[in-house]
Image 1 (cartoon, helix red, strand yellow):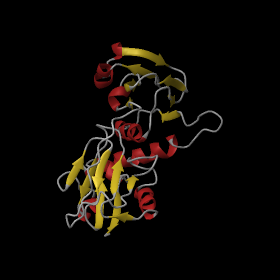
Image 2 (cartoon, helix red, strand yellow):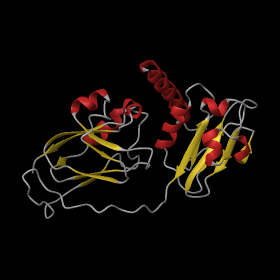
Image 3 (tube, one colour):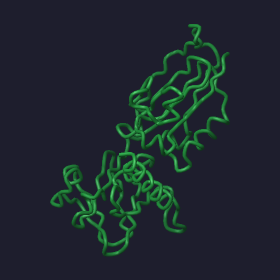
Length: 259
């Protein structure tokens, strides 16, 4: 089981290193590149890739693959779930194959070559509503019980524009983000992520270090944007309940100072 997890992680690393490199003169920030292949276990890195992208209406998704070896087809959810080739909406056989994300919602893509979809060559892409509802932030309370709503409270957007996702730079990216900030009791962390694909887990140090989060989580936040009030001084450890994404570097530790 451990060996399979390591193999999936290795495949994910290879795919990320390739698909995150820009192709000069052709792609731009509104284009998402997919290295389209049928390696065993590839469904895991495709799920991770999709979860860390920030899709918007009218973005383009470009599937790059060797000519004649694959196809890229948009299908219904039933076609995606069951690799049903009768559920094709549109199909491209030439690479690079470009699909425009014309609407909010989840778009499903598979390879129609025999056996490739069932091997994992498929990806679901969710385009979120561009105007999500904002969660009300309750007045922070210090560890002593003092209402701190009148004090200067800072709201920190975790990861800034990148948000809360596994990063190609690993946990060092979030370490660098946290190192440039001062966290005080009563401050607020806001985690922005893709609902149903990501979550936030407040965990003990041991769970943070070992990515053993499902059983050890102190609190889990499943709806984005997730608001966490830093109610006490000391180190606070955050990761995700998905151990693979934790291994990939979706981890954050903040040192909170008293006021």
